[in-house]
Length: 160
Image 1 (cartoon, rainbow, N blue to C red):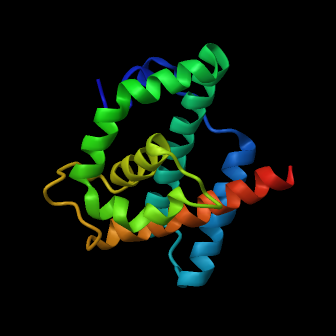
Image 2: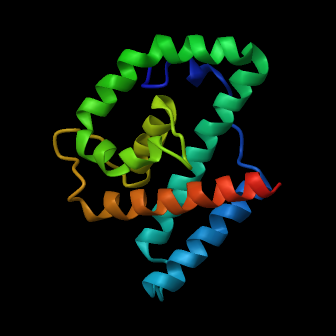
């Protein structure tokens, strides 16, 4: 079982049109701000992969919540705590980079922090914890993007 344990038993669904729109807007903003002229730029592809992966995990947790309730999700978090802690230890520099997201306005929990880091690793095709640090420009770019995506999602859900 992966870092998310029994969460993997919940079917992965496509992200919603609303979430796809939010991700596209943030990607477009990044393209404009970073002066990315080539739409085939690998960074754009990584941002899209990150968005899809992170939002899919988020939807799986919501599906678990609808099936098992808040007690089921809380139980899952306790079951996975050692896996989340190991993940945080293996990718310590990445967690330090996004540590501020545990505070307001983000309030990310251990599973959502893990989802950010794991989604960034997948987006960048990285897996070897011994060689992955924040000094990796690809991972740094994707983690920076993650902040903007999450901020846009929170603003959108607060307004809606």
